[in-house]
Length: 224
Picture (cartoon, rainbow, N blue to C red):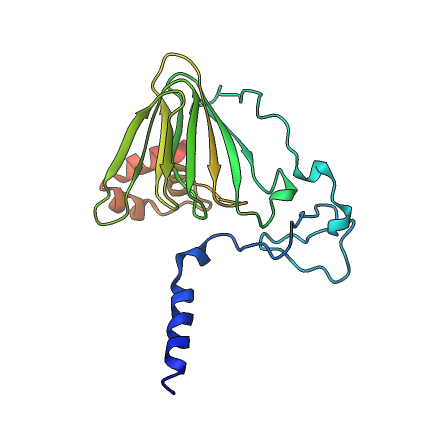
């Protein structure tokens, strides 16, 4: 290896290690509208990063970039007392490759958006109505809880991949809007994943992991 090639090699290694490569790819054209029907797909179409093909951009319409309904409250009559209304690439085809999405979250009094993670996105949340107790937990080994009670107009950020939550601590309904740094951020709800997997994780594994009796694990798993 020559001395001239060393700086180039170091630059390539820096690019490979760059955390930016872990997020959605930068678009190589104005937009990529995911084609759900297969109509308007050119013969030389390639798969986009979300596994869908792009339709011919000449066929783009305003509705490809439009979503309606975030003004409508979500139904919070469930065990958690909350409802998430997503607007990601599954609902809005024009978001493909643009690296952004959003959700509306409605909370009944005492309602909770339970501990979960977004494996592909950082989230920034704004409270529109009500009062929310929110927080996230840092990674091992510290596992430090960083939390705050938010009021209308307050903003809080949940870093990518970290477990976080929100709970309505007021006496009336609460509403929040959140933006996420991925067209398809994904969500891993901790309780569902651990206790509701299919097939179920062995009670031996979970009893040891949580340092509880197997009967406790069985009881929790039965709820999912």
